[in-house]
Image 1 (cartoon, one colour):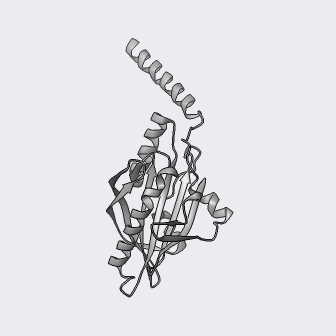
Image 2 (cartoon, helix red, strand yellow; image 1 turned 135 degrees about the horizontal axis):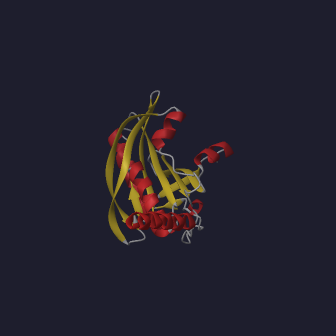
Image 3 (cartoon, helix red, strand yellow; image 1 turned 180 degrees about the vertical axis):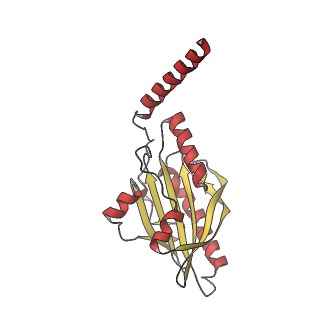
Length: 219
């Protein structure tokens, strides 16, 4: 009976601690808002897309975002979306593109992961990024999509591991801030638009983008 009482008391104390801790305001480290990401870097030039409607922003639950098209001279366009969430405690959680794209008429026809070696601006060293690589189709159009989840210096492809890390980081650091990053480019006919060229183009863009992210997505 004494052991059971101790266990019950310990559980109650742990629950009380967790509830108090969970209600504590999160302290996201100082960082520059993602909207200030440069329009030009490493030869790429960007242009903002149309702003999202209030209805879409409500569905996304995002705190800060950018939706842009970037172009390298003589190359087809690269689409970039970054959605940053300061907190995911109140139901505002990241949405997988695999859930959102079909609603826009895009059907995923293949999915795997890809590894990209890029320079990390925060760590001042190269690192391997494991990201999702999918091909989507709408009518006769096809696009290649690379996307990943990023939080506290961690790059994650898996939605499930992303959720697990969110819980772990909430308990350890009282932080649930994170970002979803998505890179898209057209696949079609012609030398610059086939799947191999599209992947090379998207990878080159990620390698140019990733070093820029250190001051916008807090470690």
